[in-house]
Length: 483
Image (cartoon, rainbow, N blue to C red; front, top):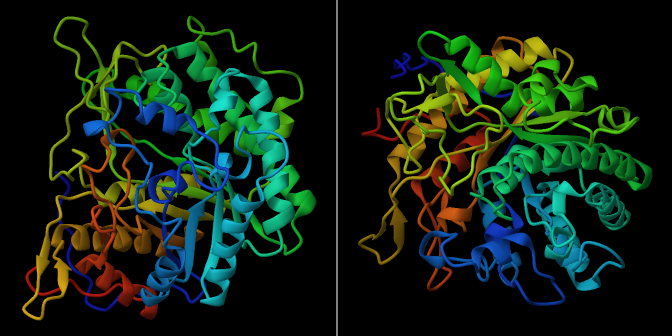
């Protein structure tokens, strides 16, 4: 269990240029799944397939953000957010993933960007947060090389319309999840369970990133910054062979993206580790040059740590990797590695709470890539929140665990900043409760509570705490009673 650190005597302040914002994803909040020309995505198909999501939940309505845009923009302004990280739904813009843009889809995002700018909030746009148009999956999805080129065309289409106003472009959010959970374990859409397909998807997602950055640079006119967001696995080894288990999972989880994206090659040990799964023939001449594009920012998503060891092949194999078990494995070629249950405390997701892991990750990335600016693009926690009514009839959500989680992680981020890490911002996940993928509406990550029956928004205590942070730039003290 992580040890508690002494509370700082003075308030910890971030630099004036440090972005304090919040983040969401299109399929998780927008709803309007069949309106205004939007085509189906793999998540529409997956969530409507019996047995794939908790309670059969879907993103058909979600938080109804599509119809409540102005209300939600005002909500962001009331929280003092300096920046807002959102994703664009590819099937809302190109219903089949190819061809002419859907004007109503582009208009929605244009209104979103203009609404942010009108309120003094910096727009941070993610091109892909997992909602691949179903028509592209029908032709192979991310296992089909052509999907990477379709993505590049989509990036150009969006860039031609929004490329005069978006301040930061992010190509992909957590391609590890798209590849390994979508094509390896079956826990995410499209729900395939094929290790070779997962590794093929890794490469085509990397290629899509590189091609998209080049297309955006060709059409953007406001000198934006370019980024990609990765969900890093902070690994702990256990027992004899723990170091080898860490090396192997680090190659699959982290270096399969950082090495091609930031250094222009795949790790040799990754190729050797997975030789029995694939021959990597899908990597063609010139691909790594296309992938290796200079980045202004590297997005860092962090929630918890992961403990691994080599499996003895006799005792029951532990699989506490933090993801739903849907029959496949997100770890191709590593069946002899097991994921050990970690000590608490835990969030409602069952993920351990370890702020020191965030500091460790930021320092490690700074050491390995010293000239690469970083931004924490997601950090947050799900807890079992309860709506209450105040004496004056207004609503409240008291979530002291989340306030404590955010404060401890922001303090860890500040320590990394003081240690010399070029850290440019922090985006809390998430602005509001939403469709939590395979967990449906059973998990609440938002700092704003959403009543899914009425769509009423209620600021949780964590939102009030985060507002003080965003407005002052200093980490507020814990409310009375939280220590």
